[in-house]
Image 1 (tube, rainbow over the protein chains, first blue to last red):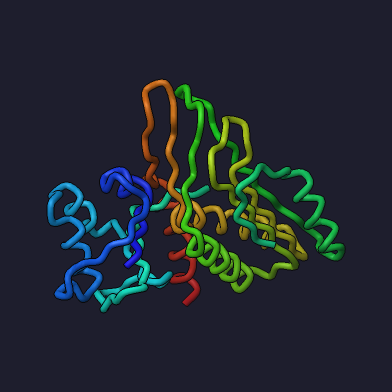
Image 2: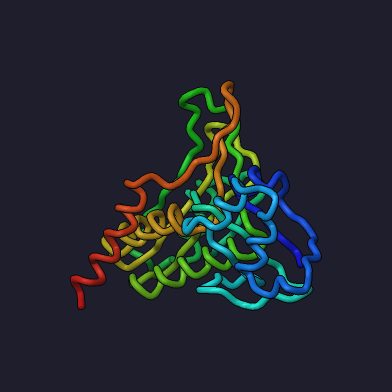
Length: 82
Length: 152
């Protein structure tokens, strides 16, 4: 799985992108989020915050969905363009 | 014309370009956003998503075309590291009459500020800080929702 972190989420994660290979029981985007934050409560809180949106393969996530090897999952805090 | 730009651009040249491409438009309105140096900001860094940003800006442009009677539309948004004084965003709308052109530019900027996937960070003497939308930006964006409700 390819992970992209943006904005202050990238600061909290200490990286902007990562290739990860979670255990087989991690099957959904929300499961992945919990796994990514398993050793870092502050990161987990931020990833799970309602203001942080998730995109799977460039589609904004509504609810949860399955993820599988080869997918790209992006974690995006509130945006600030213009 | 919609472009997510990694390099500086010239708003004057872009205004001339849309004017040339819409010779029958009776009105062209434009907005240029400039990086502010207030508070000692030395660099403004803009992150973007390699594909979702373009997709979101395209969708905002398409919504403006649907909502206003436009003869032409330009949106250019920078990413990367910018210095104070550099243009960060340029929006221009061409229409038969001024109202549609003014409103389209206002609408586009309100949506770009609150919905386009860019993340801004100011670098200055005190370090770096992420900028998030202000309540007033969200209120500005909401004005267009009320307008929709009022029409129904």
